[in-house]
Image (cartoon, rainbow, N blue to C red; front, side):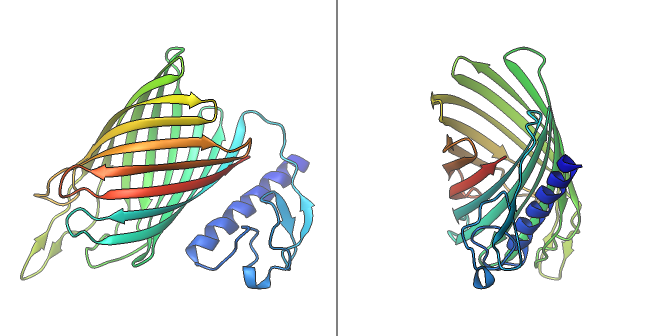
Length: 272
């Protein structure tokens, strides 16, 4: 019963964290109590709090090595390729890990345009060889926003990736196919037609320290609009382990053609 209660409490915590992004109020310690009403502003992420934001119980996570969770908050600065428009956005990602299965929920909030699509994904990892792993994934892309381009229907994505690990280095590649279901736009002065999108990437990485993994990645994605050039980019990615619970991800993406964007990003995550 105690383990079930803890799982329910963690689920409620994740729901509250997601709500803080969706409804855009300030909750610095992610305890579900807005900062302006929080009398205890520094409660930890495993605390159950009262209406004033003060700790009434601290969760004891079962020592189950097969199941884990994490929550990742990110900030991104992007310069659009074609227009040179600069945008700033925040992202929230929630992950549940059990043995070889990962369930992922993520969404992005743009400073100028509001909430973007919300993506729910399921991934399964296989180990056909000791140093080789294969990941298979399926995602549902919910249209949690509308704009003048008619992005108004649910899309679906299938993905796969291979990773070969040797010593402290790795080689990896992956591909995905997205089924775009958005309605085409027919207007007197122009027509906009959607098409399915494909993505491929290849890269190499290395553990420079036990706490720092870095990689370089080439990525190419087809455009979802008919008669538009594919997007190509080159990325430098880093994963840094701060301690047993906290970690960060940061990097830079450089667009290699006019349809591609430049991006700086920083993510902070908590693993439990």
